[in-house]
Image (tube, rainbow, N blue to C red; front, side, top):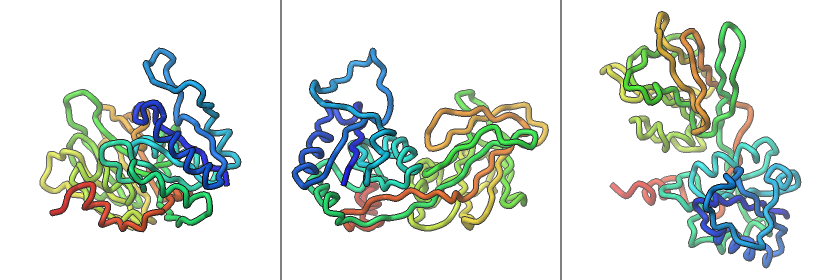
Length: 288
């Protein structure tokens, strides 16, 4: 089996974790390739080791069996988009702060040897298709493993938003924005905005207002079959910004509809440790 190792060089200084993983996997009989998850600014002062061959991520994934990411949840989200298009399962090694999506911590690299012999499970995670419709046609589309976030940006003002489910109004409120989340993303921005924690293997769409100026604006958990729409209320002269999985913001104008629905695409997450979701929550957030 070929296993692609994708370290965030800002988290994995000197690519030490990736190189240690490479030795473990090759000793177990696997073929490996190390690929950075994004292009590095030539002017950045990164300590990239001399003599380590770095491949192209998209090219190396063409015949890979597993993608292993080293970093925080942002690194995993970024690399997972490349893997999902090819149906390749993803395993995260946490080198960040919390790392809900990571299966392993840095001190558990020895467990990677199980990948070489196929001794691992797969957990499928629901995703969202996110689009912006303007005057009847889609001008933006993306897939989300975590969430789609509509916010006011850096300007100190509130947005007036309307949220629908299958074109029926769910809520209208003023606030800083809204998070439309998958169960996987329920422990990210949605949780920080007051949304519920949902098991990542569930099939739901979670709606969480951000700093709403209303007693009536509450989080909702919807059936995965719903089509969620978000727009600036009619007559609004403001603009908003849409970010999918923490990616580059897209400007949303008055009259635009942000539409989110369950995707046919799923993310395959590798399971090695046998730790339950609840053990992970207690470990990351601290026991009550």
